[in-house]
Amino acid sequence: MNRHHWWRDAVIYQVYVRSFLDSTGDGIGDLAGVRAGLPYLKKLGVDGIWLSPFYPSPQHDHGYDVADYRDVDPVFGDLAEFDLLVTAARRLGIKVLLDIVPNHCSNEHPWFREALAAAPGSPERARFHFADGRGPDGTEPPNNWHAMFGGPAWTRVTEPDGRPGQWYLHMFTPEQPDWNWRDPEVAAEFERTLRFWLDRGVDGFRIDVAAGLFKHPELPDSPDPEADARTRDSVNPLAWNQPEVHDVWRHWRAVCEEYTARDGRERLLVGEVSVPTAREHARYVRPDELHQAFFFDLLGAQWDADAFRKVISEAMEDIAGTGSTVTWVLNNHDQVRTVTRYGEPADGSGIGAARARAAALLMLALPGAAYIYQGEELGLPEVVDLPDDVLTDPIFRRTGSRARIRDGCRVPLPWSGQASPFGFTSGAESAKPWLPQPEYFAEYATHRALADTRSSWHLYRDGLQLRAALHQLGEGTLRWLDTQPGVLAFTRGDDLVCAVNFGTAPVPAPVAGTPLLASGPCPPGVLPGSTAAWWIDGS
Ligand code: NOJ
Picture 1 (cartoon, rainbow, N blue to C red):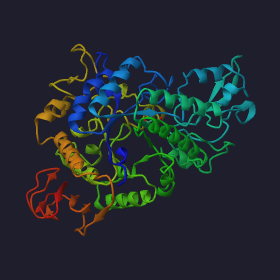
Picture 2: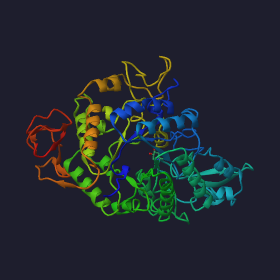
Picture 3: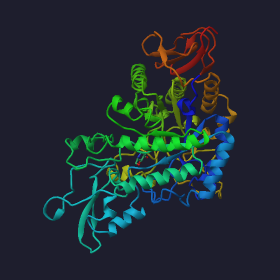
Picture 4: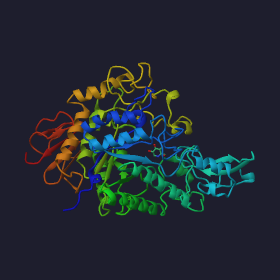
């Protein structure tokens, strides 16, 4: 019998630390807050947590600008608190994944400061991408690349003697200089970081921008800079997805396996991989590379049966033969929440909420692993009316206030009570969460959700329990059943049937009898609109 690899069908809960639970009363969530929330997550039934970056950082991109990879920012706690969290999670059987950011660091990282203080051509500068500008006096950037968050990918520095000098590359914001992975010191430093956290007991890493790291060695102009500027996808073929990156993942996999060989605990590497084709995506999860890579096409699909069927089928084909499993995602800290994305109208009639619940039940029935973003289990909608002056997402600033994308899904969680801070912060009544919570968050508070068996929380909890009871639901494949247009149905294993009605009118259910679990009221023999259900065939 094959050994079961825990990660293949794991359900991981993404903790966006600054918005989960605040133990100190400063309005910002922290590691002690995460530890206090572990019993809640245990009750929900997740296999593990992924912690968004909590390392020392000036927070220009909420921790994705790391100034020290091997410590905790005082805002979030300290290493002793981190150790307590890992111990508490281990005791509850919850795996802990960290978010590692290898493509870029913070402009406050000591090595970048050293590079600024050093001369052009120095070993200190070689750890990053420094280059002379073009045009008279080097006033033009070294090439035509665009940064993902708006503007050029280059910033000019002032040399130590006060004169305008070289430029450095940053594929995100100017506060996030890109590492030069062709410098062996960079690779060695990241290996030290991996081992530092593995020695502290973590179960693996979510890898930020895992198709980044290497750039074309000559840094030539992009063939289509307009296309690069139009999208936040990594389309510039010279800046992303270079073949050398696969050697890094092979090496990291070997490091993880070294730890597994010591203590039998399997460590997981899950990559944030944005590449143009399914075939390219599959290359990242070859048996000696990353264990898994997020499959974002489900997240990108419109609420439409054909669109969902297409992305699910493609994902299954993509993964076949790699030895990995599909890693499904509907929400994360960079995207508008499903309830709102699926069309919750301003009158709050609930259609977006019903669709989001149905999508969740569909995702939990699919083969593979699933990631849940905090608040998704509460059915939280996106906060769409945050005033401009509270927005912190660098994309907003760098697109001339055009793109209001990522703050609305990062509003601190409601836990209890009728008014902000809804138990999010244990400090004084006057303590203000770092982003304002709307009054209607009261309806979604965890205390209320736990007490109401019709809440989204109960749907997720029941789905997770059944998934576990149905044994390795994450393994194997699915078989599509014939249905009428606008409905998807498939079987898993011998007898589980999952069906989703993407339309608004009821349709006959594909299986007689009462469903095992449904995302909304579901009488026997009928599948109402915007509803998903699971049945055991023959019941
Ligand atoms: C992807 C992360 O999910 C996002 O939040 C971050 O801004 C970028 N990578 C840059 O690190």
